[in-house]
Image (cartoon, rainbow, N blue to C red; front, side, top):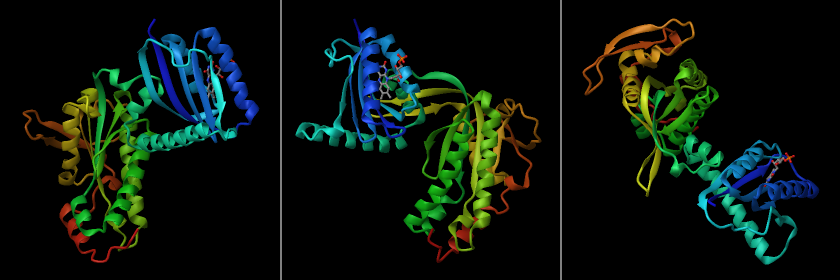
Length: 354
Ligand SMILES: Cc1cc2nc3c(=O)[nH]c(=O)nc-3n(C[C@H](O)[C@H](O)[C@H](O)COP(=O)(O)O)c2cc1C
């Protein structure tokens, strides 16, 4: 019989006494013996490292209970093996090892290894696409998931005059300015239920389900409002005074999934809405409005709002013109042209350090 094996790492959500850990072990042994599961559970400091193996559906039932358990958090699935033919922990329904208490050299080495593994994965987690982490968290292997055609709202946002900013600002000041920008943009997208598809260096691409089009627009408006706030609080030599963002939004069918070769994969969206959103983002400069979207996106909006038609726009390489729109709000207007923004940045001979 083909089996499944899961390996994950998690953090205690609150300090756990030895008897509480032993209790987890006892319940696990009882349930796993009943369900034909085997494995090992290691703990040290505030980290759990667990391997469970057995019949696929029994593993999924057990893992879904484990995911809901409030005694731990930040569960990060390290490995999902399907089609496993033999058990690694055949003798143990759930061997529970508390590494804290053992001074044996081999256990100390194991503890150090887990410590390293845990911190490396916490780092990699920040660089991995949300979909990949979610798939792994559910105990599925992203390498065996297929790409699929799906409907999405796609957002492109980026910083105006970023090349000039990079030329003028010291590298560490530019890095801090980017961090401010990403903090605002990431938070607004994630708070509204969207996903960051990728960071583009001076901006980002994000996507929403089509049913969340209003949330996507609200997130975009929030990004612009928060950047306006940041700018208005900045002193005259503070580079934040020159932080502006344009946002383009489109919607439609995209190919979504892991794309690439065995050597290197990327989780991405491909298709017309992606190109359109990227083009609309650059159109923001010409229209003088920080948010520009097309009629495909507009048709998904359900909330009562006032929109402004900006006219028609023919994207490069396309034969059909797009009707484009914005939000008629003073805060969404750029009160500076790209040219004068560039000049102001260039005149920042002594930019304040952030
Ligand atoms: C780190 C950790 C590992 C766990 N491992 C298992 C396990 O291997 N098997 C299991 O049945 N429950 C495990 N549990 C407990 C489950 O989350 C859940 O509390 C338990 O399965 C409920 O069992 P009951 O319905 O018999 O009360 C674990 C919990 C934690 C925090």
